[in-house]
Image: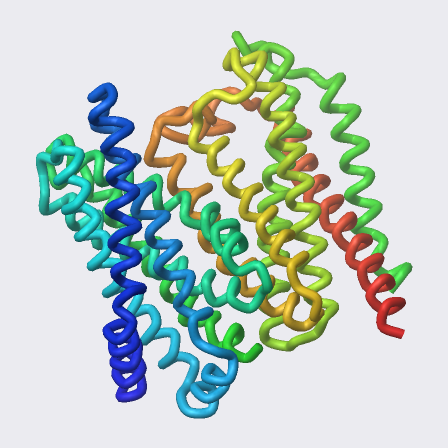
Amino acid sequence: MKDILALLGKELTLEWRNKYAFNGMILYLVSTVFICYLSFRIKSNALSPPVWNTLFWIIILFTAINAISKSFSQESKNRQGYYYSLVSPEAVILSKLLYNFILMLILTFIGFGIYTLFLLNPVQDIPLYLLSLALGALGFTGVLTLVAGIASKAENTGSLMALLSFPIIIPMLLMLMRLSKNAMDGLAFSVSRDEIMTLVGIDVIVIALSFILFPYLWKS
Amino acid sequence: MTLKNTWWKALGALLLIYVSIAGLIGEVPRLPILNETIRNTYFHVPLWFGMMTLMTVSMVKSFQYLRKGDIDLDHSAFSHAHVALLFGVLGFVSGAVWGNYTWGSPLPIDPKIIAVEVGMLIYSAYFILRGSFEDEQKKARLSAIFNIFAYAAFMPLVWILPRVTESLHPGNGGNPAFGKYDMDNLMKLVFYPAVIGWILIGLWISNLKQRIQKLVYDKQNT
């Protein structure tokens, strides 16, 4: 437990000292949203609610892949070897998951803010939409952290990351889009209960598997 | 090894011969729209069962590899996944032909079809991942991790998603399942052997593929 907190503290300090990485992510979000703003809102004002929703999730997906793919590759092999001798792999993966979850949570909420600023806000049930954002952040973290670990061992990390994570993330993305569409239409909470349960289930499976499989990944 | 394990291979081959003959000339119920295409049940559906079985075997082998580190287990996982993908493509094609005549389109919008497309993408990614490593042990370990992860992500997609949305496939989204009324006892007599036959043949092909892999690997490393 102490190891996890120490590692988490290390990640946060690292992020704090290299603020350009985080600012880069924010700028990435802003520029993507701005491109959508230019191409959808100004040109034709043709953004129906389903398109609005899909566009938002695609932006979040790409941001997530960019943000999380560096979680293993930014540290040198030697430093990883150093951690290996100090702490258990469980502590490493838990701290990475926690850190990435915090990062994703901040990014999705900021992204939502920027997105609604530029492209209006047709969401009727904001709390439910925010819940779907949180579930999405958790699920993306679970899938992408382990995939980032796998991809960081290969040479062509960048393309492999997208290649491996897209198909795995699709089921989750479909459920998320459905849940957030319910939130946009302001449907009753009971309608979305199935989706929430499924999403929580997928998130739990994915995170438990990262936890189980990471020690094997760490060994190589 | 050679003679002891032949009975199930022979059984698989015989069952498939029986299915091909009985499936094509046997008596089938006359149903509107489906008509004679109902015979595709003997080929399209068992191919999916075969694919699921092979994927599961592949996942189990990957898991065993992580526990034991025996490179043969990795070859086994790879060849089972490979044949699973082949079965997937065959099932996809036979389904597209079938859909063309019954649903009016080879690729209607349907969660099961989406699920299978995603599944084929996942396993293609698995082969790409395998191709991007030089070191055998590293390749085996990382692709085993991905294989287990992919299986866990793929199964909810196939089993849960079609059941909560509308689907054209029987048994999903309120449509009646097989055996409710469109499959009579005579058809079951062919259908169940077909399922077993396809699974056995799939295992046999994977087995052969694994042995070839082992030979190639041994040759490279001597």
